[in-house]
Image (cartoon, rainbow, N blue to C red; front, side, top):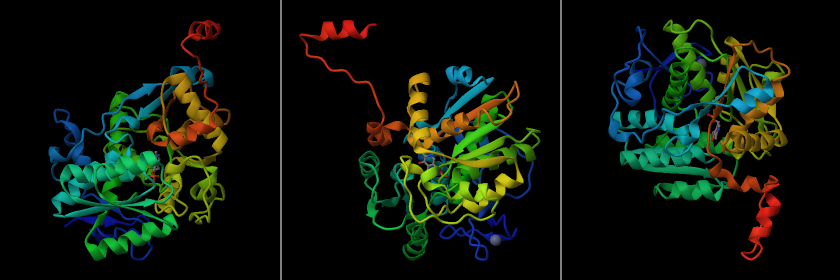
Length: 399
Ligand SMILES: Cc1ncc(COP(=O)(O)O)c(C=O)c1O
Ligand SMILES: [Zn+2]
């Protein structure tokens, strides 16, 4: 028998894939592991290396798309600019569908197949739709995708190519999220949404990779963009696992970031509240992180308070400047949602007291190619010439 636990009332409930929420607190439930000494299996491939820390008995490699193993890049120009000892980027954009969501889909799909599910689904602002559709196709499951109607063409078409049942839905995203579970129960569709307990366990693997990439050390700071809160919860759980297993002594400081135009969790954090208040309207360039009623918001607030960390917000102007800086200075092209990490680091760099050995990691969650629309608001240098005056133009540009 498998159990899910509520970190609010501490109760455990038998696993229900169709509705993984506490019936008393209404908060998302997390996977509960039976106590066991855990280790990494270094000789194994892919996810099998982390099997002790995952909610699966075995891994079927046929359902993998080669997710994970993403590089931890040194951002040396930014390091100099900010006068820090080490700034690193965990480049999640190179996952199979170009975002961190693949790590969660990879584990949730294993669970779906092992439990005999024939239908899976997701509600998404875009990245999770593409990812779930890809993994659904890979495993040969019927996949249902409900999308926000204002989704970018890049995300819409790159989801549709996998041929899921795709519906763009008008109306409030928070309500759509909750309604999906009613539909899931009724039509036997496993909605592996943003705070699905198995998706969250999948996000831990990026944390384990960072620990191993840093020669078995935790970084001192980890910057993570937040919408539903699922990703931050997963990464925080990875380092809790590492601490519990005795692999690290010091827990990293997590910095969760939301755009000012959609910052219910950051507002609750600033007001020292334990529960966030849903917001009426969202307005930000960081379209991927616009959940006005984030289902993992309260769990994230509690975990941040119980461990180390903070949740802050950044403006669209700061986000766009950071997006350009990452591309220009370091060659990394990410979505505005992901650039919130650098925007937050720039904002905090005068305020946080970094030590000389501190390692700061920015989680670069998704590729910029999925949100080219917003680039129009940046002042990008593009020159024009005819063939006959090309030489002259080039000459003037050489200076
Ligand atoms: C690119 C990107 N970054 C960050 C997030 C936030 O993740 P979460 O909803 O798990 O907080 C999302 C969510 O859709 C995303 O697409
Ligand atoms: Zn509860």
